[in-house]
Amino acid sequence: MTLQNVSDTAKKLIREATSDTIDDVTIQTYIIGVYKDWCRELRWPEGTANMVSFTPVGATTTAQEYQLPDTTIKIFRVYVNGWRYAEDSIPLLEGDVIQAYDAEWHTFPAVNPPPLDGPGSISAIPITAGPGLMQFSYYLRGGFIGFIPAIASDNIPIRIEGSFLPPDPAPTDTLLLPDQFKFGLAYGGIYRFLLGDRRVVESKSWKELEQEQWGMAMRWRRDFGGTDQLPMVQPQPYRIWYGRYNTRPQSIVPRWGITK
Image (cartoon, rainbow, N blue to C red; front, side, top):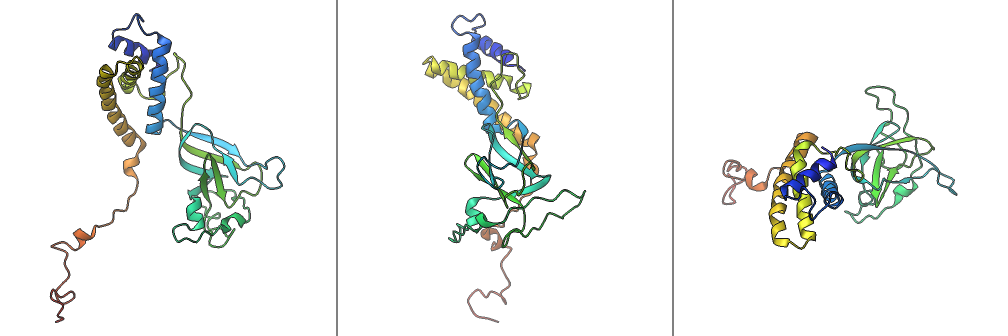
């Protein structure tokens, strides 16, 4: 499925195949907007970003934070020197929940993750770079990713796996969504075109058609991405625990407050 395929479909659906009122460039501009919105919300396609640690100009130590690609939608996994880093955050590091506001993580000495020794190796975890620090982790600060502890040397490989927004496609470029959503993208392009042409009432029907296809796309992404298979801990509500068949025996919890 190329951008041209989708735009041709859209023009046929609104009987504009001969470009009487809308040309290819215009309808394709609308479709590109729909395509990138879908990719952003579906967190698709998945990809990787690779970089290496370095010492900034004028600094004397290796950087702790690195700028993420502008196209980053969602980070799934982070590896430094082959080791998987745990997700963390500045509020957790500083103890916001307990109002500790401890910025001690800034002072942890830099550490290089050791080379992998092979399958099953645990030589990198736990580490003792700082008080209470039991694993390598990363945090986000705006458009930057930081590492705890900081990386000690330059040229250590950093690999970020996640979802990244694709570039604007040319008419002959293959779109990074399956062919089954060609009509959904076409419906969205028509909706935006009609809205821009101030045909608001007419546009609503095409928006509804796009929303129907969007629901299918979300189910496809959920199944294809395997998110339904993630482990989950489900707490038992107190109403169920203390329900009719889960009350404690009378001898333990007497109904009238009189022990037996």
